[in-house]
Image 1: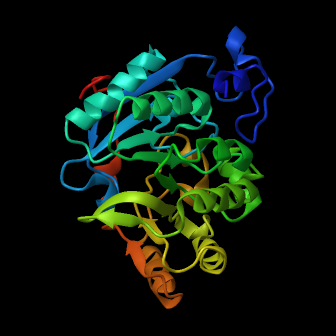
Image 2: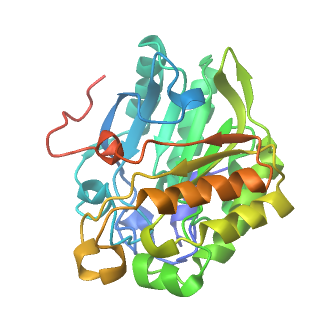
Length: 303
């Protein structure tokens, strides 16, 4: 398949902007036909089966198809910090990460680059790369497009940010977010299954669903957990994240100006347990700064 032909009238994500990215036109994500990478290197801030002891080979792509007012990666999602690289460069980065001992290739905010990523993964697999590929996404995806990654992605690592479409509209400019998150996560399950397969504690294939717990219950985490139990099952790995910080434009929104209270987070943990989830990852409530990158201080292309 000619993956790049998808860019002629871009409908890769739910925005369906329809711009011709091959001719340099830019839609909501502000990406044309270039691959822009802000940083790559071994990353230790993911869930234990992803980071392990040797780190995850994280590649942070610039841009995003959401506009989260509290984005912790706003420097690259909104300000597009990064360097333009070729597809061959991207394949070379994959192999550099493998040579450095990373447990996997962790594609962070990959959605605008799905055609490029599909080509690069195919090339890497043809050249004999052995470590798994992790698709680390906000889940604002089109399930039809995700189906093109079947057999290429080994582990899906989606967020499920909001249950309420009005909250999704206000905080991320995407009132259809819940629908597309549901559809895309079900497609991910279809491709890789609901159970994370591990070897020596390191993920090899499967699904981990991330739930960032927002102040004042704005993420609707309990509703999301109920949906996951009913549609995917309690054996799926769930990551309950307490790392919310009021960054970027969060100060403009009174309901999210503060960090998460410990009792709010503990309540969600207890609820997940009451629903019977078997594989739940949690964070320390005071660990939010541990997961906060500063891309103005990082050296791009550091391995």
